[in-house]
Image (tube, rainbow, N blue to C red):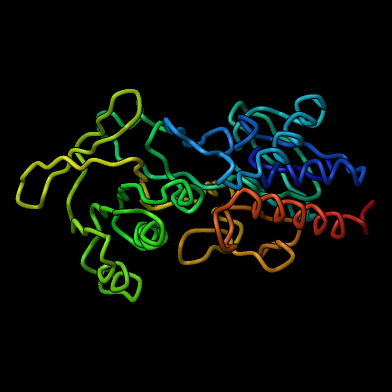
Length: 302
């Protein structure tokens, strides 16, 4: 039986696993890959990478350690976590594995809802990205586009409007625009709102530089840009504990300041939780906290 199983190989999971190893816990990180969202980043023809705080140096260091420590990782998706009557847990993997552990950290992140239109996968990370909050500083005096219906899109548009020459917001709903954030975006002079428009195709030449969009009346229009962001709903990858722990109204795992969930012995960290801001360095810090909290929990059992 393991002392701790960390589910998820992104910034939070990697950090939690390394911290647990250094606490000399018998730990196993279970994930289909290592690196999480740091494996994807925006590329632009004239990218000034020094403007972006990536946090990848820390994550890459932890990733290298886990790749070396093969005994501490298992590359396979997790299907379910079950709590036994004695307070221990079984982690079930997709290949049929059953891993026993005294405690669990869920650090599985979120997934972005895709547009599912021609050109999207071709230009993914090449002028088309999914985190305006990370890359907004790259678009000073440039033309940008944000695609999405709700608060996430409007939040991104509001930040981009403070630096970009112009922002097209494609697809916001009437309800979202009636919020205080929506009213702020509507009042911005360098923002064009294309309410309830739909993207039909992503176009470009090596890098994405145009969107073909359709109006509610069916009219097709092309929008040019230097960078575009898909800011649709984020979905927490928490299906393996859906019947175990408490969730917030957005479908994220509820945690307290010690990264404890509603179930003793289950901790959570990073974007999968209710913590503020989907940022790499935030996830790294949350992963460290979760590992330290799990260690305190396990200390009575060691």
